[in-house]
Image (cartoon, rainbow, N blue to C red; front, side, top):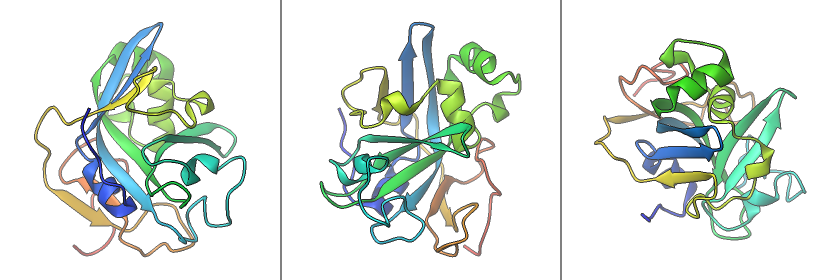
Length: 192
């Protein structure tokens, strides 16, 4: 096991290069994390902003637990809780660079181009078959979904504003590996 920071912004940056692994009866699918977004305590764009509910309870639990929710009634999004127990915040994993199980990802997503398999939070959950059943999972326990340390050096990490928000939209809380073709959004959304 490796250690990760317990603070939202530091965690969002530290996750770049880590590997997300999904084991199922069908086989293993995995990818390097190449893009994240931080959602801070008291952040109006964070699901925890209005207080603890049944839906967002994982964000208020121990750090580094999977927070999985359904967006637009069609796609799941994978996040990690990021602050000490009791403080609601999280990091959205926006994109992966596929590593293994590409045949499974292609089958699940119905696309062939490796670039489109995990480029975006809904796509990566579909490709890895991550659903609400993983909400609250300890990603270090390795029960079907786990996080591993980076196996290769990462490129430079850049920051920009988050994607698709109306509240707190200008904060530079999106982190991405510069030059990586699997990043989901524009390579640059604001000045460096």
